[in-house]
Image (cartoon, rainbow, N blue to C red; front, top):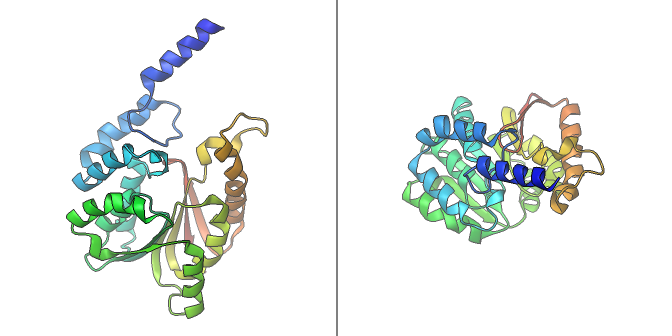
Length: 249
């Protein structure tokens, strides 16, 4: 048993993915590395590469959007011709930078996060890329801001795209508000909807405490989105799972 265990550990170390804090549901780290080195890294803008490498040194790097998901978001935004967007949960700004690069020069991103210090790690890179004018960063909880926007009335149906990568226990609360703020035909993207694969783990599975705590909230969100008649959905196994919701009514 001990020898087998050592072999498994050695094999894992050999195939362990090189990107610090990576999130991939692919069973083979080597396959994920192939995707990155073949299709993602060669096309990754220099600013995104620089921010990814800075973020990799941060102790909370697992919170960042993966490089392949950043590439996906960038292309998605171009495909839907997004101009007015929102991001809830910014961290150091990797996904924010992917968005800013995809938007036209007069595009706008309302970006909200409870931690400005993390955002400011990436801000010099965003500024150097000439993209800071597209970003309206708000420090603090997003729900009060959303409530004010809905109360105001003039923001209903004005957002082309909204990306949520924040506190999982509030995802449903976000959805209840964002569905009114995104335009008909617009898209909301909820990140981490496969939650490290824990959504199919048995009840007694050994999970890290934070994975176990938020799993029920993710499961509740997935069930609610699947039953919401106001949206079309597509759940993808990119990164840690992302569910795209296209508002249809």
